[in-house]
Image (cartoon, rainbow, N blue to C red; front, side, top):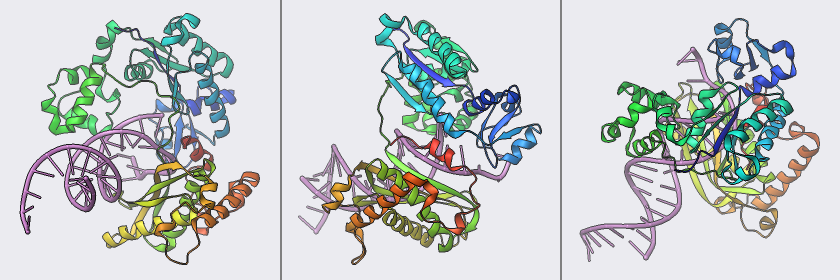
Length: 414
DNA sequence: TCTGGGGTCCTAGGACCC
DNA sequence: TCTGGGGTCCTAGGACCC
């Protein structure tokens, strides 16, 4: 069996740790980044049950001494990049999966830097010395096991799982640590009496199929025996671009829907244009006040990247939701996503090759002209900032539960 | 515990083509 | 006019991840 050469490296309580690094007075204290909603919590806050995504009021109830800090989002990006760069000093095979987390395969570089465990020690020491943060690393033969190992060894840990110990290591752990087991599947498995990965591994596949489906059973069984076929994938491109906006409780009416969709389309299209991308499939999502959600999608004959066109397509999709759900009077979220992405340069547009003109009504402005107008706006924003120009709608004011800088952090590189 | 924002992948049925 | 089977794309919903 081949040796364990895959590292999973994960910065501990990343945003909160950065804040404690910057302000020594916050060290050892329960802190939360955010305000209306907790974006990240320190380990001291997690001990009280404070979690990311939690409402600010609830967090305060759980932890009365909780300190809220606004967040230094630019620095999160910078320090996250720096940590991944250290990992990249030891192998080109690095797959970043979020701002604070990456896989690396050091199989080919042992002759330069020594065995995987030595590399892991070096990386941890350098991230500590050069950045000032703790990073946990799991080393194993597969991505799945390396990831589980790093989670188990947190905070500030290093664990190597030798090939001969894989099953012993894995089988005592709770099933919900597995990739692909979330709240729903975890509950189903628990109800079937399965609490550990070992119990899942010992379970005959057939008996679980009715519970979680044939494909999921196959996948989970493979992972439970550490048969994970996934390899490190570098240079992955995004497959979709989206944006959403939580609304609290608002009327399901054009006065709310139209400006919100325009704002979302504007965010999405400016990102696509910056990367010279456009997409053919548009999906709109409407969540009602009781949290039930529906989606409508359409695949166009040509890709879109113009704000006005995407807005119109999304409006039509939301109209079909309204027709199908006439009794729904209140909504709590609107979202747009664009997929089937393809390269789309301005040059192609000038030669009349697309951007959604096919589905347009006669007499409406051409996609190319709209794209040009949008690009002009993009340039102004490039110089003076995103807020300098655009669709400044009154309804969008005072509704920001999450800072724009955080949204940008969450964006995947297109 | 009444829940933010950005993503990926899977499933299942139906349309359509050969 | 009725019939088979495989492949691909589209749409809607859902679970999951960070």
